[in-house]
Image (cartoon, rainbow, N blue to C red):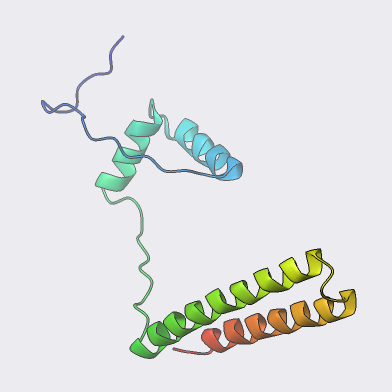
Length: 121
């Protein structure tokens, strides 16, 4: 049996998104508990009738945006260094000790950059 039409307009625009297994299970439980027939009906009801609360993240300040840009560039450079170190280690041009120290240094720099970014704004 076809679903009853809720309007004269056909439903022609699909939306899709991905969920983790746990999120899908939670959503399925909510749909079942709602008494609505399908996920589409449930989601249309909640989204279009504003039964959800949208929490917008505040826009990052100019300083934070600039830091993110610079840190992304630095992260790219760190990744390139890590690639060269790994290649040198694979061909035995580095001692294991030197390789571990270099990788630890890269990890320390990454940790510092992430910590610095968390202290802006």
